[in-house]
Length: 197
Image (cartoon, rainbow, N blue to C red; front, top):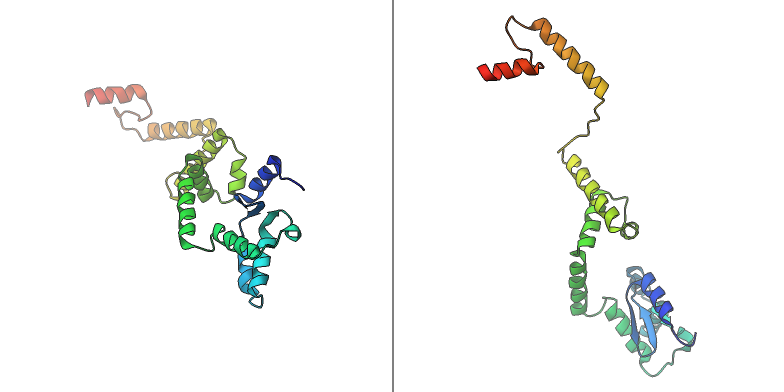
């Protein structure tokens, strides 16, 4: 690849999130797993560790075609570590602040709420939704949380079954009614009772 076109850059950003460039070199962040390899391979000398960092994250050009100017691999490896968040503490703190701000954006707050209530979803699943679908999932998550906290239960009402229950209740009241006493289900008797009452 002689030049990197905008489509390739877009693909890398989609796959890796942030990408960085120093001179003609384009690279991505080192993942946590990749960074752990540095601590696992204690037998590596500094040059081997630096080569590993650059080879692992370099997107362009190929590692073998890098112009190995004196100290370039060392400088590039240090920058990769810093930009990946494993170097300077101040940079890592800034990245955390940026991430917190992004989490407070409305869509991200909605996604957090859904994932907390419905762990079967992940961030990538929710990115496929429209705002309307995401809103429905938030409403669903609210109901799930309410139910978990004992706030409500779902009752499905069968009108026929309710009618039978009401009829049985009225018949029982009629059977137990004293002379002159109103039946609780009789709306006319209830209004008379309230008016006299």
